[in-house]
Image 1 (cartoon, helix red, strand yellow):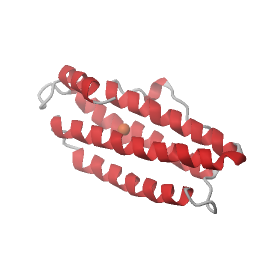
Image 2 (cartoon, protein in one colour; image 1 turned 30 degrees about the horizontal axis):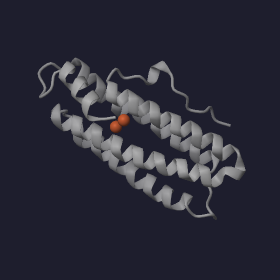
Image 3 (spheres, helix red, strand yellow; image 1 turned 180 degrees about the horizontal axis):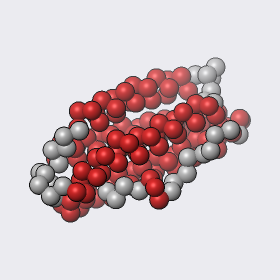
Length: 152
Ligand SMILES: [Fe+2]
Ligand SMILES: [Fe+2]
């Protein structure tokens, strides 16, 4: 059995909006894992997975808006990663809604691996750019403040 994805300091990137969204995504993954492990709760697991799909779509839009406003040079590549995962999440969501194809613990492990790898890879790269850049369209302080105001 793989280790569950739990929130830990390593996942904090120092950009308020991103950290709050990622924390919520990790919490949803934990809930999905718990429900998948209780086999009778398949529908509950699928419902929480749908919430994760919707929340992730909103989160990607928020990150991409921030990339545009901060003139992030890695934006196109990062958006491609988001696009790939969005397509995969939608198809998994359709399958999870079918009674004959319940979410499995190996599926949850793959999902958690993706979330973790994206935060520690593409997202960390973007957060470092934000925190180190003073000559982008947004300064670090403006960026963090505007995100705190605009996105829940
Ligand atoms: Fe992210
Ligand atoms: Fe991202």
